[in-house]
Length: 333
Image (spheres, one colour):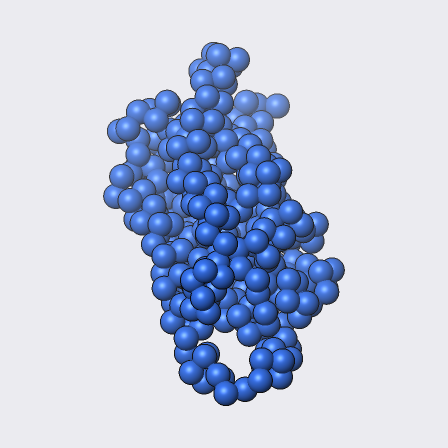
């Protein structure tokens, strides 16, 4: 088999593996709140999330174009070796954070892996700093926006429903939470699955298999299927962290958090901006919890998540760079 063909296949396999891991790593984003409040049974929630992740992934390709076109200056500054190294860096980080049950951003991991591998391969000249700045800004601002709007949404709920008995209110919102869990799953798929679509399309473009950066339909199907399959497995460790270790959720607060997260994530998708769904959901829960009582939020867990948030891009950049160095040594690049 020709080396280029082998590398393209390697990129596709690794990108789909990344998507699969992203699916079970980030399952918590879509269903943690509804499972923790017992609005949905875990298995039912996962099946619903898997289906709607698939549908969401087929929605658009704007985020894929941002990931594939805004990190490097052009296809001339990236090749399949770089993409393989970047994907391995992101996958290693995702598996590590899943193993220690720490919610982290697959988006950060992928961006960091690409940056590290490109820096080693072509140097800073190959990076599109304007595009990277836009991506990093969206990754940083989205959880902050989620916290602020989560706080506002929950306070509006207090004003609207404060006179109702908590037990009666929670019973009503337990049913409504099924709807927001569904919208959350769709939003998650609409943003997260596109990242691997962008990577595969970038590899096809750099390898000369396509002439312009347009995501082929079969790439959309593959990425959507991989994420749906990963979601179907479910990342129970992170579900427990997101669903219960940040703030003790009830149906009304879970509904507010999911509603807020869905709006933030889907708005980013419409703007073709990649965001960390993990951090948006976590930010929404923090905002909702703070509205009830600042002390009700377990800020120790939040600090650990913030640490993972800060470390993800530099750590995956280092891993991506090291993998590329290793590939250079092994294959004589």
